[in-house]
Length: 242
Ligand code: DC
Image (cartoon, rainbow, N blue to C red):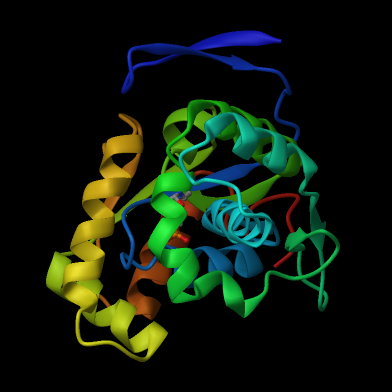
């Protein structure tokens, strides 16, 4: 066990498990392009893909199903302990987050979950459980996306990317992804405000900030691959398969 100072937060974090493989941390607000990049980057560099947003979303979904108040941090932390997260595989990839032995359900993107997930993700006790589980899942090496990965979960990540994009562009992307609703821009702005109370969207000091406003997913991936290669993690890096 060791303690690391988190300069962005002015706090100490206890790191229980030492990292045994390469980790790429991808942080940023909703609609900045994190999932699209993280999944493809993981495939290209041969690492597991872990979407920590899905972990908070399943906590919110289970809280709804079990009638747990989204403001009851203690009950949420007990519920978080009961959810099993693992790395599963549907093909020959490096694995990705599975929840209670199954791939994440599309219902995690439902309006009901969306409406309360920020509130559920606010509680320090539940976050402590999630951080420990996230670290444990990723210690053998992964591409992990979220809000606090480069700052808190893996402050020792080998490469940290922080994606940003203008709010109107993020809202447009969300609308394309989720399909419906005329109030996506307002919903994204409201969730940004709620999310920022928990994780001030400050990039880790040693992260690479990529503004994706005017970039296609392929261009974002191209830039990330260049940075990964420079960090010794690219497809052509020694010791890694392509
Ligand atoms: O990335 P996403 O939209 O799927 O995230 C869902 C929610 O979980 C969002 O409200 C922010 C929160 N979250 C968090 O607090 N910390 C993370 N590491 C990932 C997500």
